[in-house]
Image 1 (cartoon, rainbow, N blue to C red):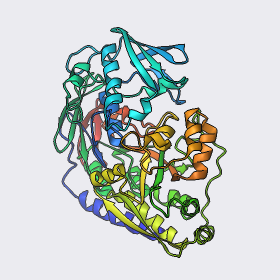
Image 2 (cartoon, rainbow, N blue to C red; image 1 turned 60 degrees about the vertical axis):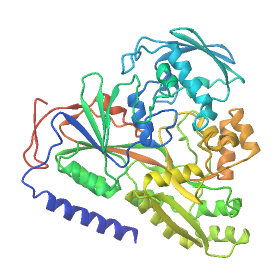
Image 3 (cartoon, rainbow, N blue to C red; image 1 turned 90 degrees about the vertical axis):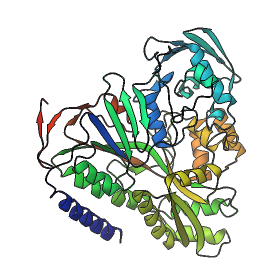
Image 4 (cartoon, one colour; image 1 turned 120 degrees about the vertical axis):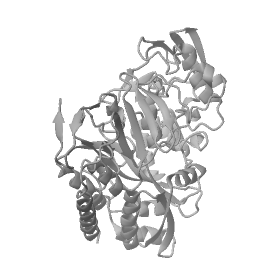
Length: 499
């Protein structure tokens, strides 16, 4: 059944594309602009509230943070370097670069302190819990400030990845969510139907347009109506793009973690036997093979095994529908077990849900799929209005994610423990940063159902040069991408001048 769907879907796509290619010529995006078609635009441009993937990706372009990470997921200085004066005292010294806000203000230690102090004081920031260990922040001069902690935390610098905001605008309750002011490599220009950013270095205009249908995104790229696509495409569409001579396609192994979230306030899902049954009811390998881009792989916990805090020793939950049925019987449930699964209206997400629905049927689980527009869906998840849902953790670099997602103190709005998972032993292991045992406990308890690390791909028209694909799916490659001169003839027959 899945293979037939794949073949028919690919055939329909190729037929439609062939008709479109009969147009007189390709329709290049507006001269001077670099356009990117994305599956969803950000929810907010205020880094203190951002939790969705699109917001995180755009905010990395708009703001600079004190700390970033190298290719091995180790903390590295960005705006500032640091010294450990004691286990509970860290001194940060701002460097010379990235110190000019987009409105002309000079970024100082006062802005850093105001940014983090505002997060601690905001009643509804999902990041407040991450910084609860900060006892006070002292500014020593315009370049230097000290963070005092309640408890020793050797990994504290890795937490300081929020974009820095101007202190004066924070005091005025400025709306950063729609009018961001940062010091990053891109400056906000406008946000109406599309999001427009200007690159500081050369004033290059970038336009992000939300196109939810993956086939439409592909056809807009082929026709020259957009320049860049990244992620959120089924493999047959990626394969189709690879055959187009006017395009360049990159693929890589990914680190973004897909999972099924569970509501522990639901009486059925509180039973660990039911959660184990769900884990055994999904043929993850089949879904990866038939539905995901190259580079996708099984996942057992949020951070990949190559991460310094990863756990490669975790045993995978194998696909075993008979074992799943037996677990449900042991839980005292009558079959089929009826569950409701929420997802977005994105075609790829609905497709994944449909495949899991068919697999779960063999395990005695009747899955009802409810696909909602992104805003409604994500709002339901944040409010705990779900039984099961599917989402992905994107761009995660530090094990502090386990505190944010699973510690009992991180129930919204103080964090992202959206399933209201409460386990004293897990709390203790997270508090002492015992990541091998914390991840093993989480894997045993199953506060979520782990799925896969989704592979990454990007497709660009050949007049877009220098774009580098990142394993976490970030859009950082836009910092260096260039637009060369293009003479348009027909799609797939473009020639470059001055390349």
